Image (cartoon, rainbow, N blue to C red; front, side):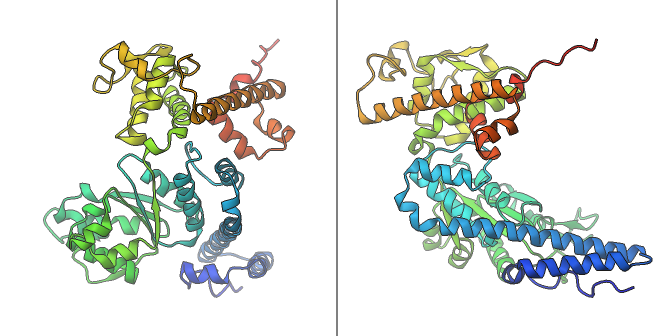
Length: 436
């Protein structure tokens, strides 16, 4: 019996495989594998292991085709982007099964960042994400990983600013037994752990110059050396880096290597601060409220009109991270309804009179402006959407698949809408009947 001489995709780099994968070649490999299994009279353990590797490689190529198709569809939609409204662009992302664990609005800068991430995800190119602290850079890195062909592979996160200089090389590249005092055994580094997957280098601007030189070598040669070893180790790792600092300015000042900056920033994504994404705040209220309720094992909290108005107008210097912490705090301290006194003391208004500058939704004193009208329309639309979903779940007994079928809607899109409104489908399912 003869097993295939070469594992599918085993001898070429991911970039080479990307260029050569086709449906015809894939079907041919599958047929060869089936023929091998059909005519095999006896399989020894090495043969079984080899066949399993071949099956795994074929699965990876199927995933590549899936993500390549998504990339082509996203790229094909680009010429018409200028003709779409912000809401249409957001809807188009959802309908293309764009994987995003969270909630996002229709801010133009954010949509541009997400559309860039969608196109970059399947390519394997390095990505540099910048933005203020707390804007969701690690979440964006996970989005890029989840929408690429490495989604089933490891995702390893490294905070470059938290590693002492003398341990940096060991943490990133690993070490051999006896390489230094305390090295009692061989140890893999972060790059080896992320082999075939994605490594996320957070706070890359804090990396010392010596570490920058070694990182540049890895990006150029795709190989590492453990501390205490002269043996190079090949690594196939996609690099996504993030920073809240201006790396271009740092490179001009000589504090960050210019060649490393250009190597990391092949694809550059900038996340706008939350104060520029006001439309996203109500969505995040719902999302983090549901998340906190699940963690604390209680129903999602409600907010008084004054508290909600204050939070909609608050500047959030800590961005999304600060908003999440506030919602979790209120979910813990409040009963069913949260009010001003449940806010952290350092942001709480000095007096109730201060709240007069924050018009509550529906108040007569609300300013009559174009923005106010748009907000009122959005609120009415959201309310109608929520009522429609609740009525539909009631009719289908809480079965999401059935509701999606009746509405001719993509199931993942429907789940996003349910999460947006904090609706739990299981609450609409009939209670089980007791056994007779």
